[in-house]
Length: 350
Image 1 (tube, rainbow, N blue to C red):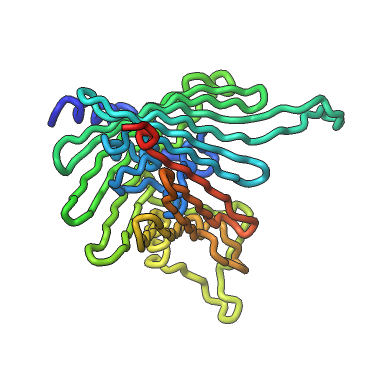
Image 2: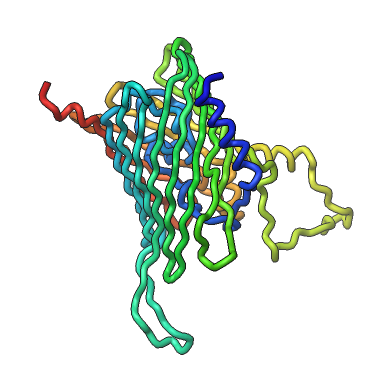
């Protein structure tokens, strides 16, 4: 094991104990986990283990950063809900003696709000937003293994409340080029707030562990992806505080007992995100994903529709790769994801 690997392991152990997982509003800077590219959004929204020089995957999985991404640029814009929008820009460069680097800027704009006092008198308007400036690094250890890390500087401004934080992502990837099989282990958002919204009130960051695998079929243009996310916490179920379930059968009067097998299967599949990518030609790719936990949390009991499903299309045109994706979070609507990627070296005369 070389010195770089030892340093990364020390980072994991140093921060993981203080980075306890909390879901659903119990931690801050949740925007860090929003899908940063159409490819990720279309395949379920979690980190992907696909080693094909796609720079848009680097922010979620820094161990994919490699020399093949050098001088690549990726821009993303997402039209979210209720006037909220967010976006990303990522650029990569390789230095022979130090490895490959990817610099990213991500932001979320919550829009403009009317400020009023307790009587309803309007005092003006204010805005709210959050930003992260990320420096990623990746290095190939040998023909199969690579490692990577992201350093995140995070700034949040919500009306008169401001906060600054630091976080790192660390990941390792195994890639078998002969079988086109890839697996990645990702530790996300290891860190803490440096300055708080309120004095003395420190909030946790959205720490997460993900295991991602992908396999491309040898004789068919299909790639299958499976991600196990939130591995740091087994039970991801949520019980509505005011929802009541009948404890007895209304017909027989017998007590209703929940199936333990069904309960554990539900908890297991809340960690699973699955997707498939179909590439009939080199210039077009279609993708479909399913996130079971999103489906369970966001659907209506009377109408499940396509909540939890996502899809996307990527087309190569000239020197650009255009991506569009939609992910069904709720019946109220689906966010639109747009990503444009290019290799800036293609614009330089040789």
